[in-house]
Length: 204
Image 1 (cartoon, rainbow, N blue to C red):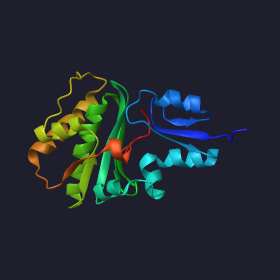
Image 2: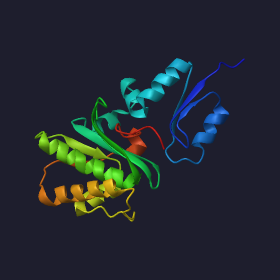
Image 3: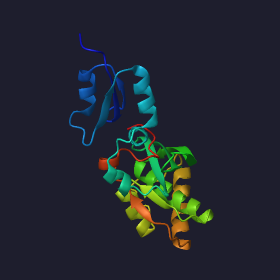
Image 4: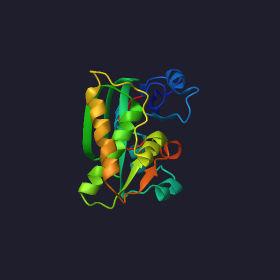
């Protein structure tokens, strides 16, 4: 009789713990760069899911030496989450190495993930400048990084009474970019090789 296994899906159609390989396969089939692993006990699976792909493999020394060499641990990481597009949106920043939360903003009504990524990146830049920090900053969003370079949030979302607070934050962020200089190095997080960014909210 085969031993029972528990399957953790960190990155798939629906991240979580699954009690059969067939159920796990449904969550990773045709999902680009799916990340999953089997465990012998439910307790191990729960712990691994809670830590996240990146933290679990780092503590288990299962990230490749190349990945460990490539990641700049003298950094913070930012990310956003949106329940719908638009939907409730929030963002946060953490210390890359420890995942210690530095700031968490939201949720706000009728935001988008791209807006959240942009706001998170600008907030991170302002945070580091206020601390006179030399740390780098990671984002997994090419769009947000592009908007920051252009000093403009190029969202197609229309402003309404419901999302007025979101657009107030956008205006504040754009103004900060136009009136401040910074030396912070902005880095692209390599999700394909390293798993989800440490600031990830753990939901898709």
